[in-house]
Length: 508
Image 1 (cartoon, helix red, strand yellow):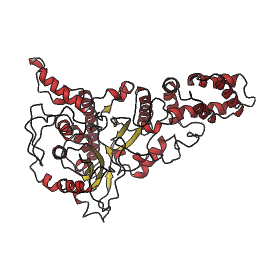
Image 2 (cartoon, rainbow, N blue to C red):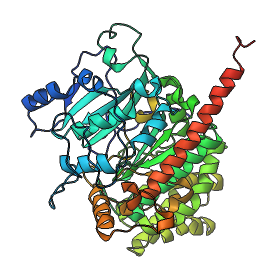
Image 3 (spheres, one colour):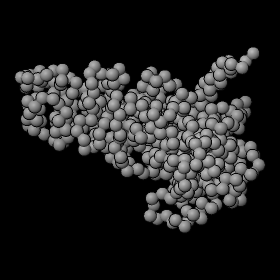
Image 4 (tube, rainbow, N blue to C red):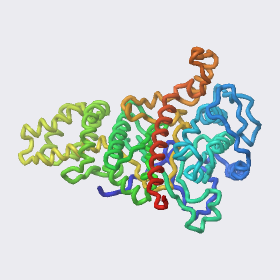
């Protein structure tokens, strides 16, 4: 399919970050967000305190226990004395307040599984050690080009800095600490990164009627459900990818991470080609017809239509009622190929104000069969209706996110600063049941731990074991799903390693 750029839209905290600057960039590692209330001096002062990773790496590599029980303390924070117990959360604390973030990272964040996922093995390797992390600090300063040899060191620095969120970038050819000495050399460049996709409901604002901007409800979340179904099956059946994880963005979207080794090693041209293959909706809100497909339909598009037809009937015609208003009904008529039929439909709809979209859609075939147009081309009408179904249901991808290795994307399991919801994985086998408004918030999770400990909910003696804090909360099924996903990935990576060893030409 031909390739075109997606519309440029304003970004906010729910959007992915912009591309990393080229490796030869001389920009400071600490960048200030566009926030008129923040102080440049404050950012510079903070940078002096956090940029030097040598101090962090000089520490002994202590074996911090992940997911501590509620009574444990943690001495990882270097800039302040170790906490004497679980952080105390003020009743009026905001989701991204440092004490909330410290409690969340200390007690709930799955650092071990995150490490295994990005490292592709149990033993530390350059897949993790040369990986870029970027932190959004409490003062909104943005700290780039951070790397860590082990998950323990990543955890220590996060507990020290208490970022409101952090992003994951590519694996580089060299340690990120050496990038300034190598910046004039091709020896420092991005080497690998998961293939990613981003779907955001703001890209559906011209067709969703229930909400707009950052607001969502169960009705418009169906757009994300449809997108996951279509893109997931295409990635698996058409490209042969197996290790695909969908993650809720925390407010109004979803991200796909494809971790197959073949996907991670794709260069930018191959990523662009995959994104172009999946892109069907083209043009911005003010453009005309957004779906222009050749016939016969490509097998991927034909399969997508089969997936989307039932959703169109209920989720679009009934729940969204997109053509209820006269100006919206005119948009529908613009997408039909016959002027005489359009005139007959307009006359009928003008005579019955408030006619629902499900009836207007049925009117198209009814008037066509009744002979409203003597020169009607039935084939053209059928194809136009297929294009309309696709325009109102097919995934609207932010393809720019997928094209480049250097693009940073929000980590799974971080907290969305606006909603407080955790960016949890979505089980695609139960995608129709996923409820974005039911995803727990960070404060709810911390309260669940306190409630468990207060009520002393211990299992029967014969089943007694030391529960980790996440197991006391509604985060447990999401962490368990992530752990299973990571285990499957590690098993596949071990198989690839054995194949390479078997094919070693130096073997006697």
